[in-house]
Image (cartoon, rainbow over all chains, first blue to last red):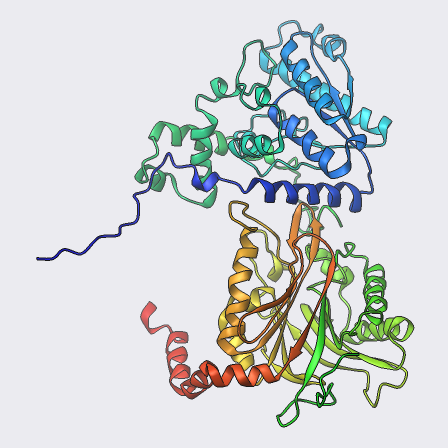
Length: 287
Length: 320
């Protein structure tokens, strides 16, 4: 019997990153247009301030802002605490020098310690939150001083994991990276020429010495992003397990997302009328 | 103005015998949110620019909700206007800034208040300045969006009512139809207006960009399949005008374009920037394409059976 050649679709591979691939030049162009429209046309600002942590998110944000608005209109601010790593400061400087943007440094140690000295037993989490909220006080105040708009740097993975301080890291009014998973941030950063030493180093909030995001999570960004991709598409947990994703990974990722929906919303207000703001009375942010 | 000999530049519907070719332009602009007066002046700016174009457009198409921006939520109630007021405002702009002694047909999207309801609407009107050879300023047709999307980022039916009709209508430049955004994501709508005689489909949209893994933005890739598909299936010209600019982080994908009845793109604008695209629509192409590929006639010939099939589906006998 003469057999027919079989052309079969490849089996699903849970380690395939094709769905997370981005067309980096297209994305760059789109985000530049976004920044020009949202900062300039809609809000009337010519300048922005970006908190430069030395990490890939804020570095990429600075690169995008410089491309969109011109380096002369981007002001980077380094806000170290006394335990922050020297390397973070150096990497932030590296970005500012590479882009030719202004860069100032505001040491938040005295401000943070002024409060924490009253709370000597504060946990690491509380200390980290105090630093993050102090950085936002500085960023917004500097933005007022410089007549510039603060630009946020949070990515989609950390937003979904709730890995940020509520009403601190998430508070700048414009955010170009918030719908990009961390692995997509890396791809765009490499395309835009963010120094490899910044892109390839382990991501860290740099609140505690030696801390990394992935050790905090218990899963790598690459594995988490593949699961988040399908979870946000609406695939139920059962389906993800059938597709071959490890049960422990799926539960960990889903658990973090489910536990932090509240962090992605405004405060809960008791609804008492049929004109409750954002329930009945609905106007878009740019109205 | 460059014109082939014997070509008529519109004084009634094209029914055959005389060639009708006209110049169409589509403007993709970034409106200011909820600032109707400003956006009307912006439309007037385009009228002024069009007077200097050579050849000058006969039909000028503006995107969906160009007078207010698209994502308005409850703000629809603040900006909705009657068709008469929009027409009068456009006519005033044209009288002030249009080409002297000329007429211009305009397609434009806006939120309409009509008979106690709000709609996402598209208007087709003739505007006149001075002596335009007998052309009379008038509203020729208003289409209410048949499929206001209400899923994902879209929330239209929460704020506007759904249109109930899909019409074709006569213009100075052939028989036409208006469709808005999701209207054409259902190919049956274009089939219906083509069966009603439309030779030119004016499609206006506000299509927010999403998915950046491919060669172009994901929704744009879909439009690029969709519009030439409609043009080729029904042998119609498709004139598409897309909104541009960002609203609350959502950027519209522009790419206004003119597509001929063979599915060929004659002109296409960029995805994020404002621009004016222009092309010639020669309605002779419609007849030639339909004779070569009589899909529309085949569809018409089987309508009796199709109606029975659709009726059967509508009665849901298979879903008890």
